[in-house]
Length: 128
Image (cartoon, rainbow, N blue to C red; front, side):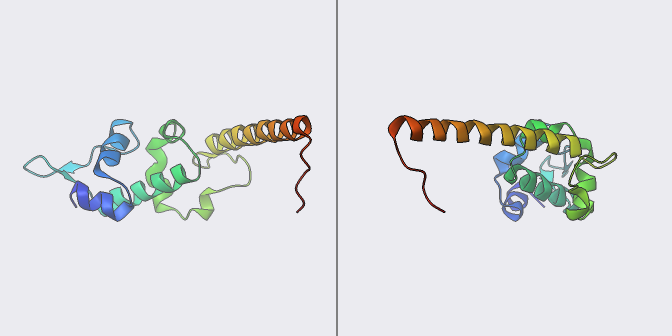
């Protein structure tokens, strides 16, 4: 499958696919005799995993730390790869734990900011 079709099939753009390849999230795809990228169903499965993980809030750099194991995630049910905590051998578990800690810290910071602004302006706390 050529790059435009692969991009459409995974809900992204050809430019994004080239970017993911450049950043090491995808191995270089096979090339046709004329040099065009030719994506396989396995490549598309990995692309879908990349898109899902990015949509969940992981960064490209987060994914880069375990890019060599993204095909494993593509071949395994997502539920089997989503532990409640870090478990040895679970692909990306430490990256997910770090990202969750970062998000929790940001939520706490924004909550303090919101509460301080309410207090400074005398605004009531909304009900519900």
